Length: 239
Image (cartoon, rainbow, N blue to C red; front, side, top):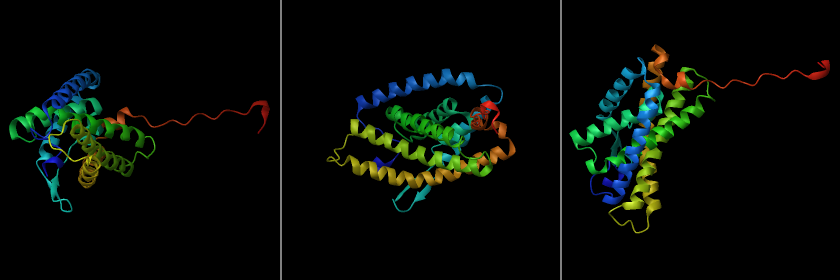
């Protein structure tokens, strides 16, 4: 079951691949810091701290996936992207992963680059791309926002799980006997179920915040609704 865990333990992926992804994660987080500084203001800065603390706290709560014999917890990429945006959101999730690895041993310290790439970068990016699309299509009502949060959270979890499959293909320490497709299918199936739990938590949290303080939901402020093109008058006086 170790190969099903999103928090990759030391020894699951070989050193060179882990080092490459550590460099990739560091470069991406540096870019997030530079871009995120443009968004930070008196409203977003404290919100980022609250989001990171909330994700950290909720990740302590595991829910069982009975059909797979494993348990899952909130990853937080979609939640962070909705509330504080993709750049600051990725940083929030990365901070949580670092604390969990260093303090609780949840995920290997040598594998931090892999875990940050999957959950903080891939998960948050996939979620925000979907959020940007859905908020331009769905009505900005509690129902529309809830559907957006649920779908983006579910998809982000599955995308993050496939990041692990890619990493294992590049440097897995156990020979799968050419059954990479089987690993991908198993990871997708298990994390689809985990994504349902993630989607429910994310939708409930974001809709609750939006009902009380919609100005605190970054996605509602930053992503403007699509404006229909103005009608062109018919020339020649025709009606």
